[in-house]
Length: 392
Image (tube, rainbow, N blue to C red; front, side):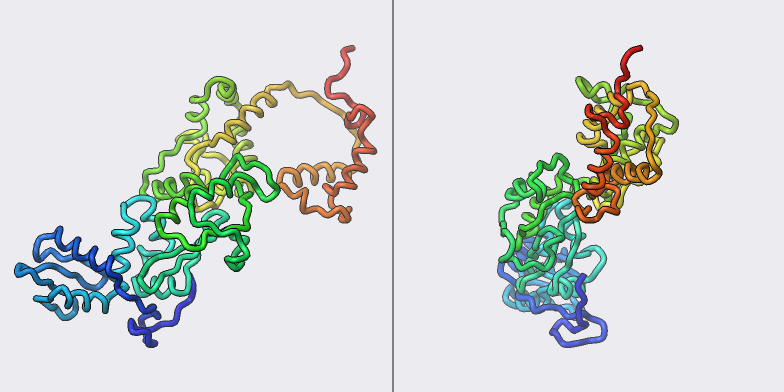
């Protein structure tokens, strides 16, 4: 959250209150107050932060503040509420613009810490811009002089880039095309993989479009985050997920061996690390058995093994069904370490980071080509040893 300078509601510095921007009470917010009061019994107040308003029996209005005022006309009520516009527009933003008590409302309130700070503190911060991270997204929330929330959504790598230097969008559905390919033009089968391409921005979204944009970029992440906060996240663990598989994926059900379910640990370590997926894994082997590998640090939870995990596990099930054999190769200590470096670099996706001139790196392309030239025979066998030995 951006720093703010303490000030009074009139914008002058004070000891306790942050600097609050000047807010004008818009007509639609005032009309919403009148509509809400019309739906209440006389004397039943509509509560804002620090005060309330109600209708009286004579058709006037009551302001229940430090000094209680009764018999107010509609004009008097408007003037009183205009003096308290931050609180009224805050109510209007969440009750009428955002609406429903669900994931959208919870998400928007979370962005500006609306459940933990006062209106004055939040409006002061919003005036400067409140920033939140959601996966690889950077979301910046601001407030207009009418108390309206506006949101800038972009890739975190584009923080600070002027809007006119990015590809600007205003339709949340445009995000469907933005998430399809990574920056190298490769298809992204996992939308929560840390491979989102940048170069775009949604510079001026309202609360509802913000929610739709984020849910399009990272499907179901806000919904599952909200379920978790409410204690209602329905987690499907490995065993029950695999028992549902059928057809070509039914073979995964046979892969249920190993001390401590080590095979599932291998799958999770390969697929569910922060470097591969931005979700935080909440599923284990079964309801009573957790896994021995880290589940990640993402903001939003993963409630079950995804299709990428299931598909990979199917392939590994078949590969692991092969009987092991013993192969004998001769490697120098440096060559053994180089093979280890190559595997690490490929597994971590660091191959493109290794410069051609950096021959000290084990996964350097020229050094790897040298190792291949030295150890492979004309048929491509390592050490001249075929994978399938000839029958004797």
